Amino acid sequence: MADRVYPCDDSPPQTTEFKPPPPPPEEEDRAHHPQSPTKLADPQSKKPGQPPPGTYVIQIPKDQVYRVPPPENAQRFERLSRGKPSRSRCCCCLWWFLSFLAAFLFLLGLAAAILYLVFRPESPDYSIERVSISGFNLSSSGPISPAFNVTVRANNPNNKIGIYYEKGSSVNVYSDGVKMATGSLPVFYQDKNNVTVVVTSLKGTGIVLTSGVRTALATGVSKGTVPFNLALRAPVKLKLGSVKTWKITVKVDCELTVDKLTASARIGSKSCDYGVDLW
Image (tube, rainbow, N blue to C red; front, side, top):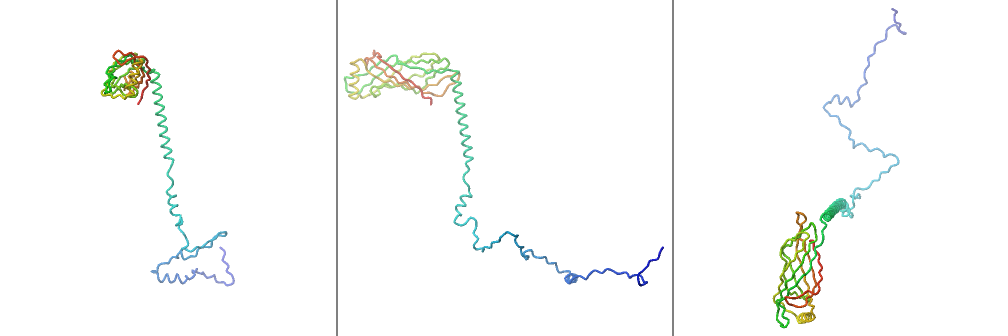
């Protein structure tokens, strides 16, 4: 093994030890006084950095900064912040109501159409067949108590509909606008395709005739044409198969003339109009 060669001096180099640099004075103090805590730098103590290029910073005194909104617009802000009432809910409710109404009317019309096609309803007709009169004393100026026996013919032409005549009907006879007698129809059932003749008694009590009405009646008797008006109102129910409907009011208005005011009076002319009130 070859021997090592050392430069210049024949002695080997001295081994040097690495010594760290002396600590700064602050660390020495911290080492001598370990009980003192380390103080952290206050971030607020640092000055803010400069704004980036192209920006501006405007400084306004604090007493000149207004709240949002300004005081003069506070009421307007509150009104607008509450917002307008929502119309969507009203529109939705209205749409549902109209839809329900349209559906109800459609179903009602459909049911009416089915009933019409199944039962083929026809309007009944009425006429006055005979009138018997008594109680007229035109020679006296006192009150009179006239009486009428009226024969009414009711024809039901329907093949599948019966008619129930209920309580609460009225039959009145008028002469020149003055009610002479009143009465009612009996309660009965009229079957389908049936003609029923009803005799009803009408009576009046203490009827005072004006001179004009008395003169008109006397003139009519002398001419053989005494005019009367008859008004009939009858609540009925229709029988559709095994089902009864609600009450319907039948209205009959007749104009007729008789030749005299006695029990043997004969009808000279007659004309009747009839209709119904569904509700």
